[in-house]
Length: 115
Image (cartoon, rainbow, N blue to C red; front, side):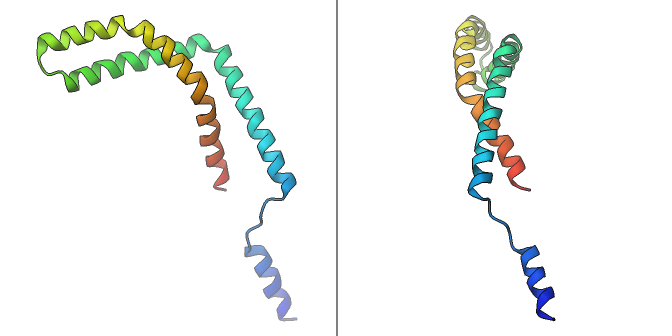
């Protein structure tokens, strides 16, 4: 009878592995989540583009201030950065839609996989 508690205790402490069915279910849910996030970003395209513009405005000024120390060149660089914003918008949107949903799903999956 003293062996029963040891067996029960070892069963409780031993980590359980995922079955093939659980793994398949998890992969299906990850695909569903990817589709939902892509759809949400497409539906909120204007909002995402505005967020990217804000990031560009802040990042370009900070980068120029850090790299260009001379005042006249600093102003010229900021002026050029303003005119390059439309090109940035197009490239950033494409990069965002190509990479961000997958990055977000992987990050979220990593958060719940730690449990």
